[in-house]
Image (cartoon, rainbow, N blue to C red):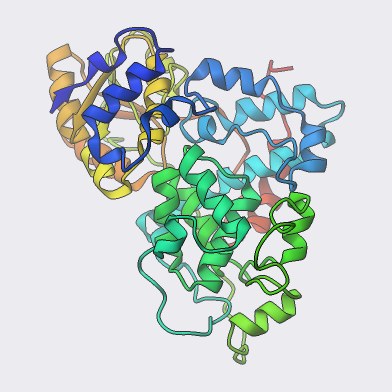
Length: 441
């Protein structure tokens, strides 16, 4: 157990010093990344940067251009993933910038996907790392690969698009949603990489790496949580990248994604067997209420998790003035293997939280010890679907009062009975998601 408070000394904007300290404290996160390149990352963590980005969104332009790699996407995902911005807050900003609510429908529905993934994770827990359904199509070839091919990791596949996506992922920690889907589709269906292997690779590098959105999106591409696997072809790629990769690609005309969708399906998949898959039904999980049988703490220690890295965390707001602690979880560090880029973003978010203590170790042990030392009578955290955090919170609640504070309402889910498909979920909640928070307009 070690207090890392010195990490935040000096100016929060002094990124070179922060990068150097993190590289020293977490050497396994460096993995060949030049420190000066990490210092030049365009995306900066923290609430101030998030609000600046939020102020620039254009819901109408987003709706008409979002599928294009050069389109007016929001790029808010790193801050949303870490709870620096809530879904309700982004929805409210989109509605405030729209002439009529319908102008924000597309942007709000994309926020709905993130809410949906998190509800599925809350319902299934660690099972989101396994096939939710049998594959919708059986791939030709042998056993799927359990490791990333070396030519992929080095950006040397010979396909201009794939190599560019890999370089961007490694260098910046961010990819457009279409680039993510194309890269995942090619890896799973063409190269035969297990979707879990690809999903774990993304989790290392993406600044917005969230197990719910990431793993379930990979399953959607793979066809293990969707009606059919996701495919793309060169025509689709050229349309949404303005031909920027294909024009000079050495394998143009005979690449892995040349042909119609029917051509690709016949090339990659076995003929469909008779019979349909049973309709998938996933009952929503009941509200998470750790320690519900114990008194609510009055002077809790506020636990900031990866889902809530801001002073606007529901737990921090509900218990203003109480001590705040963030723990770099040793289990998380060992299993997700976050790169230095991710740790920099997280630390920049924490740098804007007044008075936060930063530790490394087992969160349950750290929090229990700090609560006792600081005279706190329990633990408060923001609601989260993360199985690891829930497991740790449940363990803490056996000896300490604990409360999970809710996020501002994004949509009304009381009518949801099934999470088997997004369309069914959204049909129940979509109208309520377009209702702004009272007083926000």
